[in-house]
Structure formats: C-alpha cells, structure tokens
Amino acid sequence: KGRHEPAAVIAAQTMGMLGGEPQASLLGSREKTSLFNAALVNGTAGHVLDFDDTHLEALGHPSVCILPAALAYAEWQKLNGARLLEAYLVGFEFWCRISLSMGEPIMMRAGIPPPPWAALEPQPQWVSLWA
Image 1 (cartoon, rainbow, N blue to C red):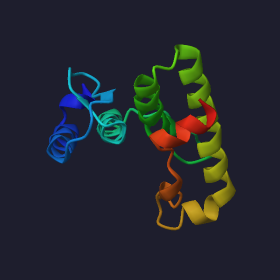
Image 2 (image 1 turned 90 degrees about the horizontal axis):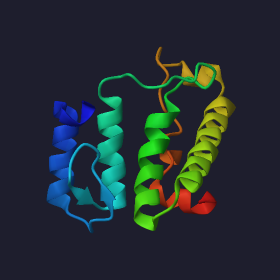
Image 3 (image 1 turned 120 degrees about the vertical axis):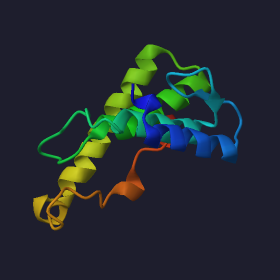
Image 4 (image 1 turned 180 degrees about the horizontal axis):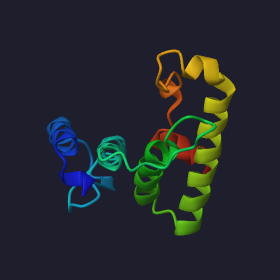
C-alpha cells in the first residue's frame, strides 16, 4: 500500500528521471532501477504510512532503513534467503548499537528522536561487507 502513497510515487518518479541500471526491483511494481534508487524508493514506501517497527531503547525504526538496502543488494547479487536474513540481522544490530551509543540526551534534544547517525544509515554497498 505504501508504494502508492504520494511520497513514494514522487520518489519513484524522481528516481526514474535519474535513471540507473535495472539492478533491483521497486516493490509493488514491475519496475527495476539501480540498487541505490530501489533502496530509497522502497524505504520511502515502507516508512510513509508510519507502521514501522520501533526499537524503544535505540529510539528509532531500524528495519525501514536496513531492509530496503539489504533487499536491493540481495536481488542484485542473487543472494539466497539465508544470506539476506544474515545481512538484515547484522545491519539491525549495527543500527541499534550506533543509535544506543549516541545516548538518550543527544537523541532527545529536539524533543523527538532525530537521526544524527543518518550519515551512517546502512547502504546497499554495506551489505556486501557481511553478505
């Protein structure tokens, strides 16, 4: 359902204009784009309805950051389900440890949990480190 929300549609249209080799699927469609574009569009679609998982101690939604990147990379490299799951679990652990290391005072300064670690968000190429 999130794939058809305005934010996800705009993301998909923008990535379509940017182009890219057809390496990974846009979930909910027959379209393929680069693994980076697919991770962005699929992550947007996954987050847009705000039904994310929540890690209360790490103050965030790790799966919507990790799974789209892992799925895109796994499709591109034709990884099996076990390797995809392993990459997801390692990414989840990494995300939570980075977030927890920041400490609650840093995370809550703005009154909401901002992502100061956004520059460290798992990217498709990171999956190759543990896939």
